[in-house]
Length: 362
Image (cartoon, rainbow, N blue to C red):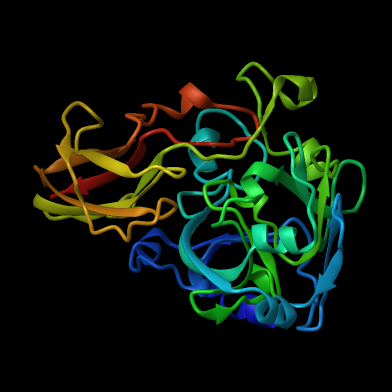
């Protein structure tokens, strides 16, 4: 834990037990590849104390189950690198919290990052285990951390459809940005599922199991579901929620900061935009709350379908108070709702309305 808390001054800490924190947005925007020290940290329990000898089992509906540590995986399987966003399903929850109460940490727009992940293709690992193929199968992951749930303490667990697990960019990862994973980011092994919410990329991996149903762990069976707006915690009905996997198109203003006092005239505005497996094709920025828009410049993209885009624009702001806002468009013509009211849900998931920042020019 010394490693983690030694870096906490760089992060906005929402909770220490479990530890949950995000970077300031100007620092997040400073690098297209997010350093490990600035990638948001989402924990559901204490960080387990694992070493390099920790082994992961691979089995279930598989003819030749096996177990291995990170070094053995790296020696047995060709390493694959993929650049991908990692984003919490609760990113920008604070915007929904401003509408009415929601559960969970009040993430701003920094529960996201973009890294180059290195590991074995999960598909290769599953084939080596003699994974059974077929529609309707799932790959379940159990981690070594223990989370508090309404049913009591239990190991963290989630699953993804086998069809997604076999995508060549889904990894059993041991490195981020060319460096071994740090403890807070899943050392020694984690799953990376590009395009899906961060919860489907579990850290501190303990087992991989092919099975005929989704995981029955709390996080998969009862949490991370999008519920309708009329539902409240005391009326929660799992049958009316759907499991969150892919993330909506989203964007945020990283500079200037909320409440900034600026010189009137040309003001530089910049931020990030992301979509699940689709390119961001346009970003619009407004200096007057969305009445008028300026098309932003999308900076050079690395070509990965899982990456984010950085954007920038210059707005001419006269003296006075201004509400800056941004919206992104993906290659399917999808864009963001105007207000967090439009997608409010009591868990505060998938907050993707126009990101708004109030500033003063003088």
